[in-house]
Length: 504
Image (cartoon, rainbow, N blue to C red; front, side, top):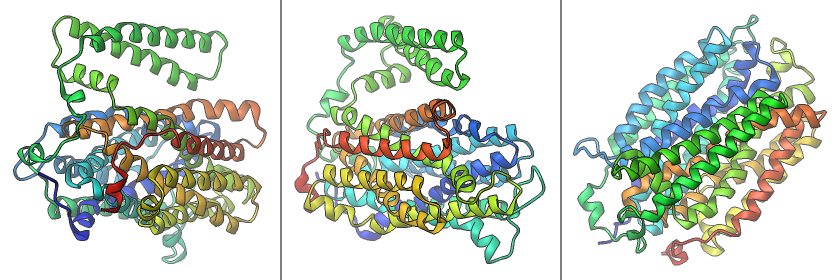
């Protein structure tokens, strides 16, 4: 059996929840640094405070993907229970976040909020693979990009609109979040919940029996067969080497009294090695069917296309994270001339950054449906390469701008890259994944999004404070260069899915 093609409105309904999800992410991206600085956070420490997103994504997404692969309810389906649960938790988090009385509360709330976002978001990627035939997958991810763009535009504009249209103050007393930001988060909470609820109520899912009847990837047996002894044997030396490297790096950070943020990478490396060692020991003792060992084994035997996409994702998201962390402080200091979070200039600059972020998301929404057409005429790889180059040019150009209006032009390039990042890698990847493990591998694919963010949070502050005078502006240039590297790496990826399916 072949999966039936879905109508435009069926794809619309199954993707609509991303409108609310991205409103939540948009509010987080555009305002969390502002909230932290209002609560007296140092600009140099912003990156480490932002670690909540990468760490929770690293932990939550593969677990949710693994669980959703094994979930089925005749009423709720496979992925939709997680859509709904995440939306409830996210809405509550968005209501609480702008009312944080202290910095440590806001940082802790970011961990909870980001975990909730990830619970809802992760199954949406696998949902496209579950429901759509190969010929419609690029359109499915493009539809998600469209809603992500629209949701982020609305979220980015909300503080500006509340201040300039409804005359709600965008300044407040020291240590207090402005009312314009608070009301933006309240609206975002409602939008998150109801948009996801719409998808839950208006969409369907195939049963496990129906999915089993559809044609599977010819290489699927490679991934669903029994545990290979060779795979288990590799986990001992791999875990030992990785743990040792992490320990040596941690000692060097301690001995040379380097920035403590570097421990995020070094200790994280030790933990990864320990996980491989633990899996190898458990399987040697006969525990080969546990969820933990299954996840480690599947990670070790991930499809080749997924491995090739890993560096592309790494450098793409490193660039994005640099932009999200440092654009507000760069624009307010070097274009608006203020680092005082209570000043009108600083808050005007922060509001304009929200508009700029809205601009790149608007561009992403507008070009989302053009990308499948371009990919059909060229290839998904070439399309993604060109888009990433445009993103690099956009970020680098910010270094030379002093007129805030020109920042909108920079955001055009970023928006084109953003649209492609949200669709093309997933469209390329899905064709190489076994359907029974779609959710888990989509969660694992998130590693190559969150690891670069953790690296950025750990090393950017150190690099900027020690090697660059105009630290925050230089971070944006580094991000642009990272986009260029990602573009070059894209050309080395093999697209397993038939290119003919793009034009079916």
